[in-house]
Amino acid sequence: MQIDPIRQFQIKNLIPMVNIGGHQIDFTNSALFMFIIVGFVSALLIGATAPRAMVPGRLQSIAEMSYEFVAHTVRSTTGNEGMKFFPFVFTLFMFVLFANVIGLIPYSFTVTSQLIVTAALSLLVFFIVVGYGFWHNGLHFLNLFVPKGVPKLILPAIVVIEVLSFVSRPVSHSVRLFANMLAGHITLQVFAGFIIMLAGAGVLGIFGATLPFIMVVLLSALEVLVAFLQAYVFAILTCIYLNDAIHPGH
Amino acid sequence: MVRAAFKERACRDRCEPRVSESMSDARDNGEHDKQQTSEAALSARLQRLNEGLGHARDAVRPASDGSGADRATTASGYARGFRLSSELVAGVVVGAGIGWLIDRWLGISPWGLVVFLLLGFAAGVLNVMRSAGLVAGTALDNTGPEHREK
Image 1: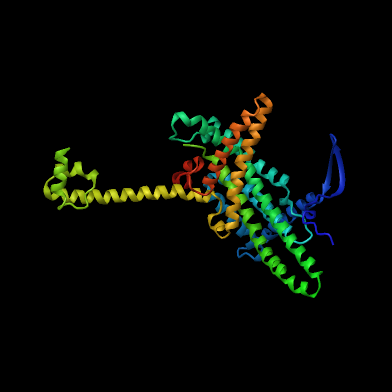
Image 2 (image 1 turned 180 degrees about the vertical axis):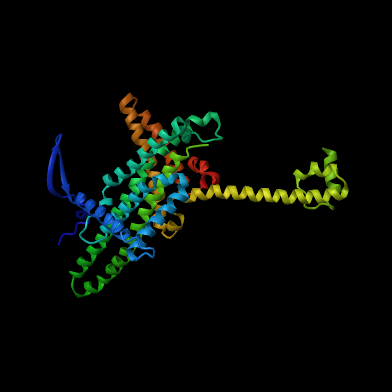
């Protein structure tokens, strides 16, 4: 039996759609899972808040808790002014969270394990920060790159470094989420592969196979933690970057 | 200078917890007042120090907040290590990319790559220190407590 830990990330074309300028645009399994994620999030939030009970039921408390959690994150990072970005941050958080969690289900596809998806999300954040920064503050936004109290002599170098640091944000923002998901899923797959290989090696192997099996159980728990953590980190970093756009300097 | 030193010596037994700032005030007053004012000045100074410390702490705290989920990540050293390494790599990669593009556009290979790789490395280190909360970033300076509470 061939064990290929990369196979789970393969993009498959499900429904051929259109051909635009020589690029084949298809409905892939990735797109399918994005629809599933959006469907789940919408169903949860719309369905849970439909009763509008004064004393929330189970689903409604999940919805309220997720609202309060993200609202607290946004407010504590960007202040009340940042609350106008709450819908954006909440959407990102729920999308990433559900993508990570749904990706943990065997045979499903992890949307956030594709660099292009996380890069698109983080570039969206980046351009919103730049766009809103210039729209809200005008050229004052550029003060972000000029730290105070730096000697004039080395200021040009510092400004270049600050700009590079700013430009490198979407890279680390997207790579972090992508690589965490990718690495976690590959590790799981490899250890699961050990179980099969050992179990195929006779009686002794079956006893040996319990070791990687324990490992897989523990890793699954870790992956659940990572799925939540990375969604949270993605959201809070978005807030921090948005904060720069809202308050770029005194 | 000499007189100040002499005064200081003469005064040392009376007003032990004297602080340099209170000296000029205390010198003009009488013996009894001197002790009181220096004590008042000391407590005022202590209070000021406390406030300063509070501000400094506030300035540092957003930095560790800014690193993203301090509480959550200390639970997982793996996540923390990963976060810092990705910051460094991102800085270097972006620097190298920009240097390479500049080389291509201006045809000054390899100087753009050399310079921007180094600058990118510096930016990466800055990213890491910022996300570890060792340096209060520009963004974090600006969002002092007064902004935050708005």
